[in-house]
Amino acid sequence: MKILLLNGPNLQLLGRREPGIYGHTTLADIEQEVISLGAELNCSVTAFQSNCEGELVSRIGNAPLDGFDGIILNAGAYTHTSIALRDAISGAALPAVEVHLSNVASREEFRHHSYIAPVCAGVIAGFGKDSYLLALRALVSRLNHINKWQ
Ligand code: DQA
Image (cartoon, rainbow, N blue to C red; front, side, top):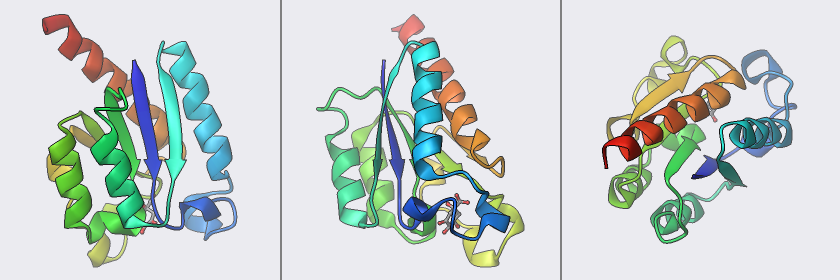
């Protein structure tokens, strides 16, 4: 099983960026933990971060041809603005999980709306780096379930 882990704008700054909200763990550490858990769960995880909306759109659009089975996405602020990312996910037609380190529901009002959530299998927010690990477990479980009935 192949999983694409995507991180959007400003997430390359994790560890230094508002640690009171996002914690002290770097993106490289998070990616490594997700890759290690993936190995335990029998799947290979490919990680990619970009500050550019179009690059994320392209990665999602190519995901089925690149052989990915599912997507984990922290779109950062694009979560709250990007119809293009939403269309990319629904177009790719792969199960996707939206992830946030912080509990966006308890923050500013503009973070309460996600364009992406309605086209995802589910959303995990508020557990820091564990949000990513929980997302991987949920996605793998979903994919195993789908495959069982195919
Ligand atoms: C975030 C929440 C977003 O609102 C914010 O713009 C981010 C990070 C999170 O992981 O908590 O960049 O996606």
